[in-house]
Amino acid sequence: MSKWTADDIPDQTGRRIVITGANAGLGLESAKQLARRGGEVVLACRNPAKGEAALAEVRAAATGAAPSLVALDLADLDSVEAAASEISERFSSIDVLMNNAGVMAIPHRETTPQGNEMQFGVNHLGHFALALRLLPTLLKTTAPRVVALGSIVHLGGKIHLDDLNAERSRYVSWTAYSQSKLACMLFAFELDRRAKAAGLPLRGIAAHPGYSSTNLQSSGPLAGGFHPINWVMAKATPLVAQPARIGALGQLRAATDLSLSGGEYLGGTVLFGARGYPKDAYTTPRARSESMAAKLWDASEELTGLRFADAFATTS
Ligand SMILES: NC(=O)c1ccc[n+]([C@@H]2O[C@H](COP(=O)([O-])OP(=O)(O)OC[C@H]3O[C@@H](n4cnc5c(N)ncnc54)[C@H](OP(=O)(O)O)[C@@H]3O)[C@@H](O)[C@H]2O)c1
Image 1: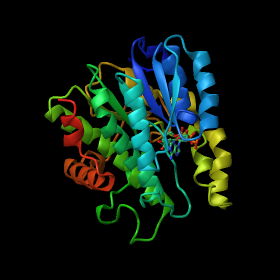
Image 2: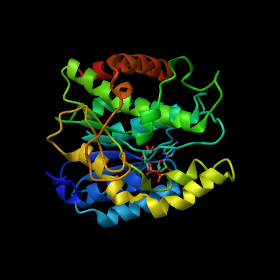
Image 3: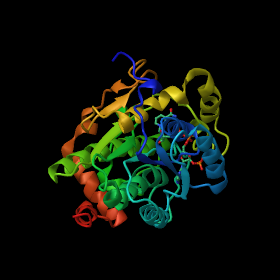
Image 4: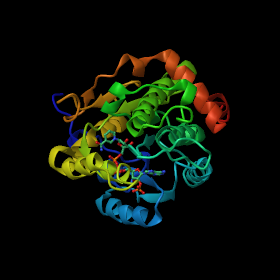
């Protein structure tokens, strides 16, 4: 296949897909495409008004089961627990968890209610906790998947195991963001390995959207007030970035292409990955380090108080 497009999304009738941050950008685009192909989409959003507006858009696109909305603030592990409980109570099973939501380059160090650095907390730890809590519901289907959002910034990313929350070192917004995105990728690959080792049908797949025009480039970077570089980036993005409908194809392929076997990293490969239709994309050796993935996993279990073995045990 030369070019994987939205037309290649197979019929999603009978599949239920939970998407975090589904009210904007790539999450909303993914929700509409999956609903258009008959999937039942559950939008997990932090802002009720934005969530309702997105729900109306997804409903208008849907050709199958009605979409629905769940409240989720990934920064707060209590909110993650409440959202996972609500999802598990309302829905008998989930086929795909698309860990899409994210914040980028928050100028000054902020912390989550549990005291974790905000980008690491939202982008990685919140999604880690959500996936582990939803594992029993995912495992009620025959071929469940967890999709994680990486980024081309992982190329310069490093996991600071001794200071994951930037407590001792100087906080640098892009360093924290690239660590968080690398963590999302390591998580997907490690989840895939652990699931296979345990004989579970679950698969972990990562995707990246290149450089896509969404709210990401303005919401985080400009949150701390005016900064010339961030202002230029926010203004330039709609002119130079690819549209969200192309950027979302990687995560859509990760969620729906049944020929994938787990552990893939899909995204555009043109202009160092900034653009293009999804195919196997380059990862750094750091992103494929099994020892680093295992150490990050242990640290994430510690920081969330959740263990894969326990989540998996409740299903057997
Ligand atoms: N756009 C790109 O070029 C690019 C490149 C590489 C990777 N990515 C990744 O793609 C994913 C989607 O980003 P996007 O580009 O679509 O950005 P976006 O338009 O800013 O959308 C981000 C979504 O995440 C939600 N979100 C943020 N913090 C949250 C929290 N604490 N709890 C729950 N939801 C939260 C936002 O909700 P609100 O609307 O309420 O803020 C929004 O729905 C992210 O993981 C990002 O890192 C994007």
